[in-house]
Every structure is written in structure tokens, then in C-alpha cells.
Image 1: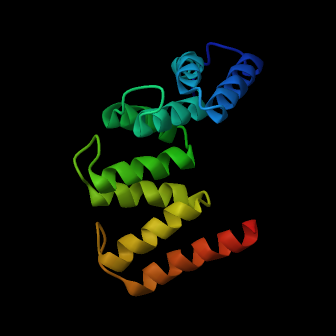
Image 2: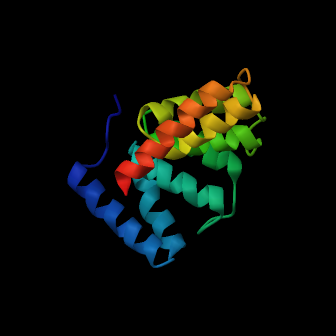
Length: 153
């Protein structure tokens, strides 16, 4: 379990400020607000800062740093981080391309109901990337994704 160095209330306030800065496209401010939250061990902050590094917003684009941050959040069960980390492994950005690791991460995110991960798992099975090709399994994941999308609508 993570030993947080700031209170949950302080986290929520700073996290909200970072979200507002991001929406206003003040990415540098978002980065500066997220850094102490990342160091304090908050998975959502680790994920969000990872997104900023992944996309080069407020910082120079750095896939290796995005991978590091996504791993921190992923290890705490953050499904969005698991999905994004899977994408980086699938594309070989910041890490050596590894379809099997991408599949493992997509499965973790999919098990938490991440529709994008379910779609990517379907594609991995459809193409046989990191798993044996299986149209049947691909259809299962595509169907799960479609059901989630319909429920959200």
C-alpha cells in the first residue's frame, strides 16, 4: 500500500486545479501541480502526468517517462494507465515492442471494463499479435466493447 505524503483533501484540491489548468490548455501549470502528487504516490496524478509526457504537453514528449509514470499508476490498478501502457508496448514507444506485454496490460484494463482495451484485445486476437489468432476470441472482445459502449450511451 502506498504511504501518501499529503492528505486526500489536499490531493483533491491540487488535482482539481491541475484538471482546470489542463482544460484551459495551461499544460505547464498542470505539470507543476501534478508533480508533487505523483511523488506522493497518487495513481490518478501519475496517469495524468504520463499522458502529458506521452503527448508532449507542458513538457518535451518523452515516451520513456510516460512509460515510467504509467507503470506507477498501472501497479496501483489504474485501468487507463494499463491501457495506455499497453499501447506503448504494442507500438514500441519508450520500450521494446512487446505484443505479449501489451496483451497482458489490455487484459488487466479490460477486466476493469475499459472498452478501448477490449477493442485492442479484439484486434490483437484478430491479427494474432502476441496471442494465437482467434476470430472467435476477437469477436468476444469486440462484443464486450460494444456492450459497454451501448450501456454508456
